Image (tube, rainbow, N blue to C red):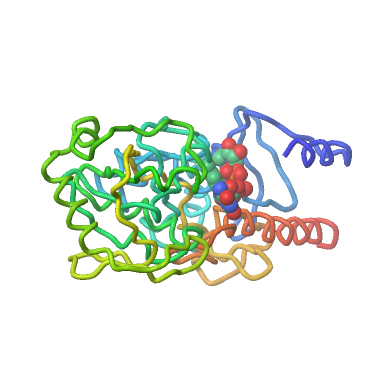
Amino acid sequence: MNALYRHAESLGIEIHYDAMVTDIEFDGDEFKSVTVGDKVITATSFVAAAGGFEANIEWLKEGWGDIAENFLIRGTPYNTGGLLKLLLENGAQKIGEPDQCHAVAIDGRAPKFDGGICTRVDCVSLGIVVNKHAERFYDEGEDFWPKRYAIWGRLVAGQPDQFAHVIIDQKAIGSFMPPVFPAEKADSIEELAEKIGLDPNALSKTVNDYNAAVQPGEFDHTELDGVHTEGLKVNKTNWARAIDEGPFYAYILRPGITFTYLGVEVTEQAQMKMANGNLSKNVFAAGEIMAGNVLGQGYLAGIGMTIGNVFGRIAGNEAADYALNR
Ligand SMILES: Cc1cc2nc3c(=O)[nH]c(=O)nc-3n(C[C@H](O)[C@H](O)[C@H](O)COP(=O)(O)OP(=O)(O)OC[C@H]3O[C@@H](n4cnc5c(N)ncnc54)[C@H](O)[C@@H]3O)c2cc1C
């Protein structure tokens, strides 16, 4: 980011920090100006790249209800969707659903905002995940982690009180990126349950039932090894190893919202569409603020940055082209 800012400055681009856009003026479908503090800034063309509304708990509640109070926000507290709301109020066409987002299960001890990458917990596929009743609720081995990590925020959000625990044993240590907070550790499952506030008998039963359901096979975390459980209400379909070698470890999980998908609709050239069916002449959008054009549900690792980079470049080119040639 520093390199990009330095490069922009060397091209003569003026950068204003701590500069929230609080109002926007349109003439019909055409952008005229934005208000930043007490300044009104006019421009020939405008690129909206002010993120989603993931840091706006009240807006998240419109999609999720009150449980959104229990969500952690993985990134900046400044992405409150103010510019997105202004664009929609000024006639932009909306795309996407208010409850669709990239939501990872992160360490429940992470700060409310900006915990960043180091609070991600990446050992779900190596163990089992239980809710506050010490019950498993989803196949932890459904697919490779980069294809599945972004569904676990939503899954944990669906559990009572919006938390869960991932339980692993000694065999899993060293096979995943360790998160910043240390795991709770104990020599027995019952002792671990006490430490994390779950019913020891319930957790012990869940682990014993799971262990008894594990079928023989060659564990290999680098491929879909098919090592699975049989006969459980929720089976694990890959990497199902018994949790039987102490010490045992637990990480608390909570939904960590990375970014929201609801945004403004754009063309392939990043040009913003208006609800009246017209195109805005001179407004372009890139990144989370238009992520809903690419993402409906789900996620594949890397798409967040790709949307910003690809549409950022297109929007920049188009905005410059409009300014030079109108
Ligand atoms: C912890 C974490 C890990 C991630 N990991 C990955 C990953 O591994 N791979 C991947 O592809 N993606 C990842 N992402 C997602 C990706 O980083 C983001 O989706 C992407 O950077 C968003 O770019 P953007 O330009 O749309 O928004 P941002 O980079 O968030 O920029 C938006 C900017 O707009 C500013 N702003 C907000 N409102 C206003 C306003 N009213 N006026 C003026 N400015 C405003 C904000 O302060 C902010 O600086 C991750 C995100 C997080 C938080």
